[in-house]
Length: 277
Image (cartoon, rainbow, N blue to C red; front, side, top):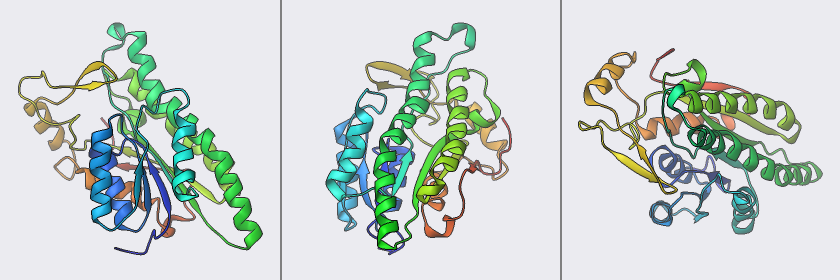
């Protein structure tokens, strides 16, 4: 295992599957101690066991990031298990699409809740902890740079038909990122954002019948992309293919390492070169 993030305490929401899992494994492989999160216990426990097999340390804080009170529980898990907080990645989320004339208030609220309100609450809960740690560092003559990485999407950068709710939330997280970069600079904390394009996960897996769904908090959410549409989407990407979860995790990882200590308030597109949709 590398020493680049040795001893750092990292929180990754939505880390039981897909991109979040890849993020957690990547950070653990670099020596970070992980707080994992998923709606369900089983996926989070599977990732925890993977990290333990790497020789790392990990605990889980399961539940919906959108639940009232979850943010305090999540940050409390990090401080309770590991005594600190160095890296925070707001990754949890899903899509629930519809054209605006058919979109319900429930669909709109659900996307704003999970993609914007939940990160806001988590960051609000984290601020007193980060402030206290920063003050302790200053008193001890240490310079420690902490990292926040928020997750956006090309839908938030360029908009996307059928995703008024998701696009609005993902645009909002970029604004929150830029604001907190200004507020938290004095705490030696960088705040950046990664906007993903087409990444191969269960939400984007090619499905021929169009009937694939996942269950999210009792809701059946349609997922998957028609194979012909998937092929067309991939042809529009300059690199000619969708990204892997590991490649997506790599983009977030860049903001977590010491080499990015003077980069803050930025959104990087992880899209294979795609610059519009």
